[in-house]
Length: 337
Image (cartoon, rainbow, N blue to C red; front, side):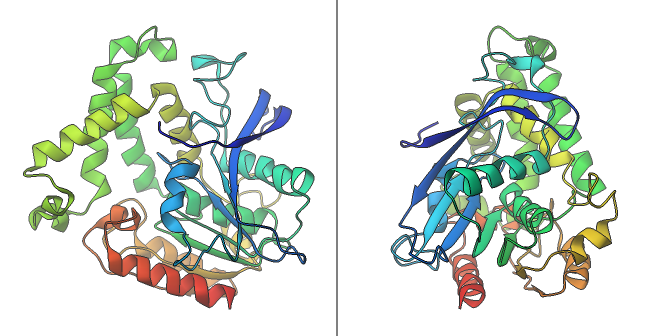
């Protein structure tokens, strides 16, 4: 992965929600801009499934609503993304020995980074795409008195059964490669990674995207070129066990999981005090607007803004849909005004 310099925060051994322990844990993160005197300009950007802090740079800039000249931006890498502690870089828990990690675990460790290391106790906004947006819900329910606003886009507070089944499909495609060897591979399971990418591509965009051949907007002459690109991206940039670790985290997404809410999803939603704008895409196959409609009914200060686009989940990928970028920035400005 092509990433710039970043910082790390040593967490030591971390007791996880599963009861397991993540040994010698580290969070990789990068900050942009300066913290103001009141410490009131903090924006947290977690990372998405195949994202890093570097990829998050597409969501802010000096001409964007999130502006490093005005805001102190903290971009934090998920466990399992190859920069924070992951199966690929863990010294003591490599490969199949890596423990199960939830969004609760990620956010609890992010909270330590922000409060104990950066000495910050208020967050103006947590926002992000896909799994990053899922973390914004997690932040607001886990630490309701700390987070003033959230803006999840193309995300949900609880992974739906349909989303879970999709993830089972791409997992099965990867794990069918005998080279994977239950996570104890010597060389990368290239055929499994290619299969993973091919299956994934069919869900990242909508049916109408393919029907109208919008892939040509991305520079592909035909569907096969797009599929090969997705294959190559996963082979070149991602470790198989890292992908599976984050996939498990995604599947277990549920802000009500754990002792605080004991699975009471409505109670968890109602606990959110943050001013909330939720932006789903009308054609998102992972996170359909119907899930967000339920959430918006139970979050006290929530507004649902459905963005209509045949780009599906990838509408939010920077550069794909200029209209979405405008809608996103407007929502951010509305929350921060």
